Amino acid sequence: MEVIGTSSSGAAGSVTAVDDVNIPPLREKYDVFISFRGEDTRLTFTSHLYDALLRKKIETYMDYRLERGDEIGPALREAIEKSRLSVIIFSENYASSTWCLNELVHILECKRKYGQMVVSIFYDTSPSDVRKQKRSYADAFAQHENREDTRDKVNVWKAALVEATGLSGFDYSNKKW
Image (cartoon, rainbow, N blue to C red; front, side, top):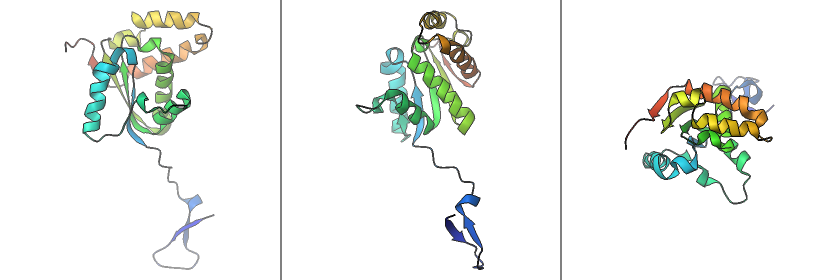
């Protein structure tokens, strides 16, 4: 047992031990993790959001931070875990990406486990389409169900979409830019 301090009275044997202190380890490295479908929003909404966060000196993780040679999956999971808040940008093709869907599941796990804040943004897709897996989301899941390597994950991904759409967020599905 490591001693980390003594009492102010200086009494012998009166110490605080590491084992007796319930201090969670520091997890945060980033203020914000952004989950998005690159082909839909990287050069539009997401890049503008990222730039605005940087201007406010908000440490933000986007996939460009991946380093050559990193294993993508573990690096993204670690970045999610080390973020205070995750922003999920649902777009038309979000559900066609297994990377996005796996990120979503991990984000929601971190919300439950660590109390991480999560904000949903619906960009050019309606919250109802995401929640009920209609239109492009239905098409994406039909493809996932036909693929042997993703078939067993479909129900978990669908449940995650329903959970995420139940969180307070922003709807930019009908906005004209």
